[in-house]
Amino acid sequence: GVGVDAHRAAGDGRGGVDGARLREPRPPEADAGLESAGRLTPPFTRIDAVSPVPDATAIAFANELADAARPIALKYFRSGPQVQVKADRSPVTIADQSIELALREMISVRFPGHGIVGEEFGAHDRDLENVWVIDPIDGTQSFIVGSPMFGVLIALLHKGRPVLGVIDHPALDQRWLGVAGRPTLLNGGPAQVSACTDLASAQFVTSTPHYY
Image (cartoon, rainbow, N blue to C red):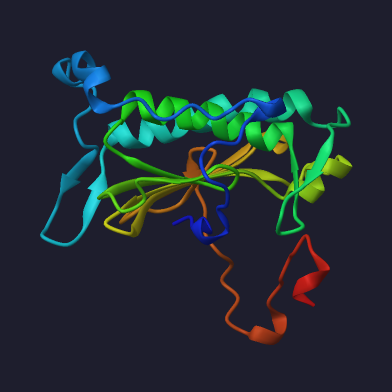
């Protein structure tokens, strides 16, 4: 599966791109027509009392979110975007903000009854049963310097437990998909760790010196 660090999300939900304010998610009644059309059916097939698994609707939507994020990321990649420094001293660019705004809008339209936690614009209804978690650009430092080692992280939590996750690397054309109870996929094919069982022979890769 894929984990996303929701605890780093910051902001009050009113930030925006180039000074614009983030739109508040529309109320559920605004999409009553979508609900009657069956598009807002909760995306879970319950297989027992504890372990729900996302159905094809939720999985397809997670891929739609990643598909929407890719062209935005690539538009600003290696374009010298202006860098701002957040209160926690971490960098942010218009690419981070634009991607998160786009994905929030998509989620609020398709699933207005779901919560959202985002890296740049904070949490909205994070205590709901179903919550989407977004890190629009994981690896902003790499993105800023033109390294392709950055990704878009998307996760779906059900009752606080991750049940679906996507890691998408736009510049490398690579996408990992993790779904509870299923093998992890890389670009549609099975992905797995190495068969190495000796710690001394194991390999570790990181993009930051802070782990050394």
